[in-house]
Length: 146
Image (tube, rainbow, N blue to C red; front, side, top):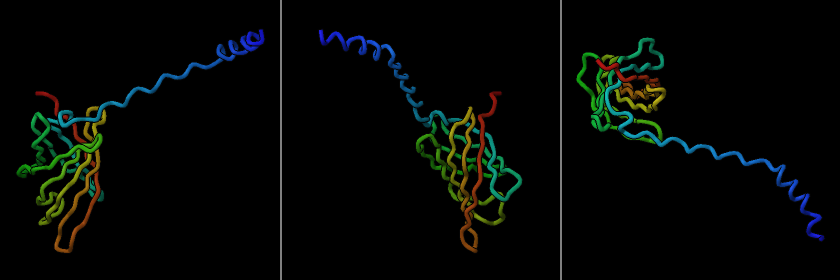
């Protein structure tokens, strides 16, 4: 009989208990080289420069063999890696578009945002006076099919 006295309280506690919220959905899988593969048209805007530098980034369909194309220039090979959700590109040194007779090497780290590639740029200029690092941004989209 003694055990039955505590039963109404136990039933009441169980009836009033809140249901545990469902667990959050798992995060989306990280992007792959295939997610970035193809052609991207956009521009890099460097700090202290009003005019963006138009560019085209291309890769093989599998996401390798990256190259940067600047107007009136030979294509520039880029090394590529994926770090988390970012595509990281490192150019070979080339003659700067913004500074005459100065070599520059650029690094970009970009993520996919609503179908566009957006991120940061670090340009390292090698001049007779030494190196100068300038920060900027990049935004590129896939060109519309013809």
